[in-house]
Amino acid sequence: MFIGIDASHANKLQRTGVEEYCWQVIQELKKIVPSDCRVVLYSNGNLLPELDQLPANWELKILKWPLKKMWSQFPLAYELWKNPPDVYFSPGQLLPFFAPKNSVVMVHDSAFEAYPNVYRFFGRQYLKWMNRLIVKKSKLILTSTEFNKQEMLKFYDSPHCHSDRLKGVEESLSNKIKVIPLACDSKKFNLEKSAGQNIYGKYILSIGRLEEKKNTARIVEAFGLVKKQFSDLKLVLIGKHGACFEKIQRAIDSSEYKKDIILLGFVEADELLTILKNAQVFVFPSLYEGFGIPVLEAMTVGVPVVVSKGGALEEVGKEAVECVDPLDTKDISEKILNLLQDEEYKKQKIALGLERVKQFSWEKTARETYLSL
Image (tube, rainbow, N blue to C red; front, top):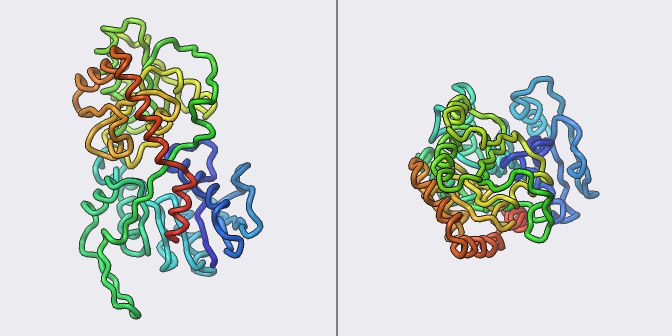
């Protein structure tokens, strides 16, 4: 069998959720795919160290393209048309218009449908077109949570059928979507690995792009309420500036505790472990997530977690996480206080988290993915 894989999203130094998934699933597939299968990775440049270590039956095909956008729709599409693989796997929620009929695509979320205002107009239209193309042309859609599956059905379920000349099968979109959970890097994030020195004192932590969708402004406001009872507490925010960052900046500037709010930008994994492991509480009341890898990272290193209820984050964390109404700043602050004030309750949540993360591994994710190709 000839398997083609888009490696462009994995081939990035600074990886957030989607890129991290692409990197990890490719690295694990290297251990799983049999040696009698031919695997080709498609990229627009040389692969990064570690990613470039390929088994004997794997190869890299560099497809040059001078522009930052549309690589998948031109050089990749042409390559797939010219030399079609038996199965094409796209881990980054992109499908070339001229894709092989046996295409398997990972859809990470439908946030651009649920929160259109936080996306630029043309970017949002492209993502909508892309998801419709995925629904229409892919053989199988993978996604990481049942929440994501239901969102796909909500936005795209017009009875999608296709005819199979041999079997005469009519297939609904629901049957075309398979849920395969993600994981976190247990080599980088684990309870046994020693953390560096804590230089920030006592703090609560949030990780993610600083944007409206991540609910960062309400995190800042909730911190202000918690701070009234814990005067030595700080808030550490990790992540690049995102959509509507000016609203977040205004929330920070108007906070009476502005001097205790620390913005670190993007942080590399080794430093991130230290900051995460020393946090009192990990706060992640995002308005919309497809999975939420940072939730697993926090639980893996023994930090209690506060997340938004009713979506993917609650599905991932289950009883191990403290769930809040993400639109209610008071609720967010009260759930943080529950963990700060009640040491036994905090230990209980940490123990539940350490058990919960045992359900997830990148090896398991990759194996289920390979069996789906």
